[in-house]
Image (cartoon, rainbow over all chains, first blue to last red; front, top):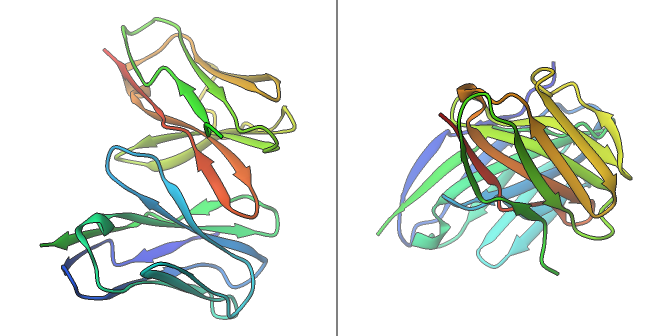
Length: 111
Length: 112
C-alpha cells in the first residue's frame, strides 16, 4: 500500500517567523510530486510540480525541495504572513499516474 | 481562462431526491477527476476520465453514483437516490501535467 505522510498535522507560527514542513512518499516508482495550498472556503491551488531529484522550486517567499531517493519533500515559508494561513497538501504521483494525497499540514500564522 | 466551472455552488436536497452536479473543464486538459471531500475522509477520488472515456470508477461509493462525460467540455456526477451520508463538497478537477491539477470551486451538497 502506497502511503504519503505529511508532518506535522498542524503548526502555529508567529508572523514574521520562517517555517517548514515535510511530505514523505515511497521512494520507488516516482513520477512527480505536487504541492497545493488550500485556504479555508476555497479550492486547492497548485504551488509546485516537481519531477526531478534535487529539484528546488520557488514562488515568492515559498520554496520546496525534492529528494526522490529517500522519498521526501520539504516546503519552506520565509517570513510568514497571515495570508499564508492554509492547509498545505502534497500529492505523490507514481509511475502508474494514480495520484495519492497526503492528509495535509494546517498552518496557522499568529499576528 | 475561466478555469474549471462547477454548478451549482451549493445544493440542499431531501433524502431520496436525485442530485446532478455539473462541470465544465478547462479546454485542452485531457484528464477530468471527480473528488469528494469530507472532514472524516479527506479528498477521495470517485472517478476519472481521459479524453472523455471513464478510466477508473473504483472510487464510486455504490450504484447510486454515476458519472458521464459526453464531450470534452462537460461532465456530470449524478446521485440517485441521495442519502444524508452523501453530504460533502464535490470537486471537479482537471490536469495540466506541467502546472498541476486545477480544481473547480466545488459543489457543497447537503442532503437532509
